[in-house]
Length: 141
Image 1 (cartoon, rainbow, N blue to C red):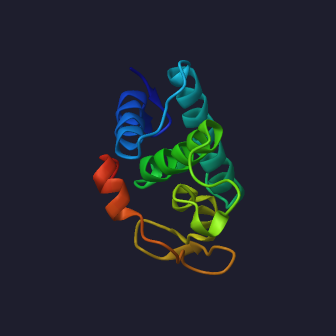
Image 2: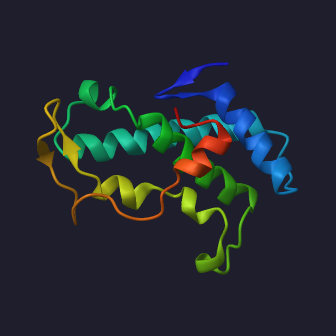
């Protein structure tokens, strides 16, 4: 398919299909259009956050965890649009952990030597570790 930001649309489509099958969920007929839009929106959101934190777009485009965050945020938005999860009970919503926007806002930005350039609003990102989820979806490398 195509690369949007950090993400490959074919990889995202495969992950959506796997998640849908694993959870016995339906996918809308216009799935490719919806998922492409959410990948684009997630990438734009990430770049917007990183640029407001002081990075240039070129520097933000080299972020090694960009794909991981883009896939997760896009999947959350995709799932929300499709009615996945429990819209009425956020605390028990199975798709909510994919929403990594707050973590993105709180993450510390490091330079190439490992020094902190910009701290997040509260410090280093803490919260649910989605590596195991991303590995099972094929996002994490």
